[in-house]
Image (cartoon, rainbow, N blue to C red):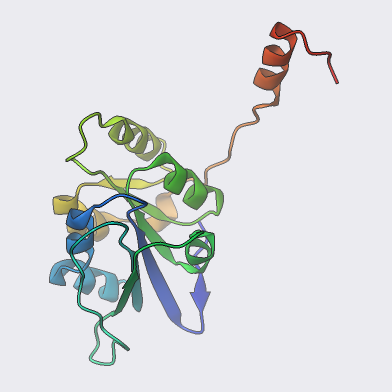
Length: 177
């Protein structure tokens, strides 16, 4: 997995998508999670917090030996943030998961247990079973970080949808290319 390191800066990018997931934001700024990230060599924590109402404290430079912490609500694209990250911690939305995996970044998916129909949990757990990512809950994020071995992750390779598209095209009466 790629580890985006720029001039000694090791960024952890956190995304909650377009929804509210304050439990994830609170978990990543908890003292034990920040200490574990710092112990693992990460220097900066950037949080895309969506519609959440909890605003974590900002830490400008991390000069006191802690992580520098910053946040924002929304961006038209998070791809550049993911590219610059050494680690991504994300909600369990399929778009965020697959965008991160396609960019080859190490990923911890945190499942929002407050969602009613939690199909996202099934996706995250299946991808964890295949060793493409780690899956956690807000309350278990620190445990996941403590046990995390990024070298054990298997790079995700997107499938080729062309054969399925051809079958659908034939069924609909479109000519073969």
